[in-house]
Length: 289
Image (tube, rainbow, N blue to C red):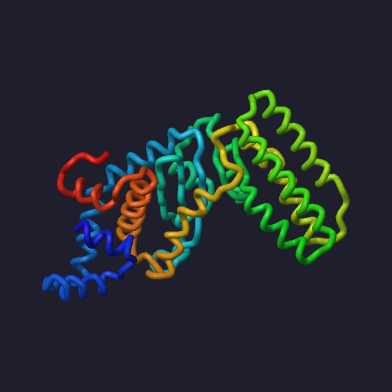
């Protein structure tokens, strides 16, 4: 059971390939349907641990969120990820709206907790305390600046501001110094968006800055918050690879198998634990750490 789960979700082997390996290497002929049934049994055993990960994420002070398309039976769905210091949760849903955030994080996600995210409107519809991702903003500013001279100064100023702010917070300043620095940075951004710009693409960039004005600088006053959403983006890379390998999930049952096992493997790795050891422990009836 452990080998089939690791073969599917770590080695990224289709069930048919795994069946061939069992036959060739272990002289154990089994069907690809048996491989699937074994992964279902693993997911059933791991589901309580999955729910525990979900509970811990709901209680976290900072959650990094992102999503990517992942078809189910050929229809567009979304693989969401929710990342904390010690947990990684994957959730596959047909929606990319704020209802998913409510389903995962709860109706009463703590007001003083922070969501790190991109600019998708579902996040601000669900929660007011956000950290918009600077990596997204800086990449877009560079892209526009490469094409329009009018955006070159904007890109330079945004990069310089972000460099200054990240260096500042690395010095572990006092709370009052953080508040003052955030106020100064906010004035800087407001100055950028008040200017007049002629090029339409530059205007779109300025509108993006303006729309997120209350959410770009949370990391300055919150020591545990990153300026970027890189944690969630990195977690999603494995889902992107699996999507390329398997193309689509086949059913609701397949979705549950996929999100459960990938969640636990990623969470164990994040906690510095050995996934094969943890997997064999729970399948053998021993308590997981």
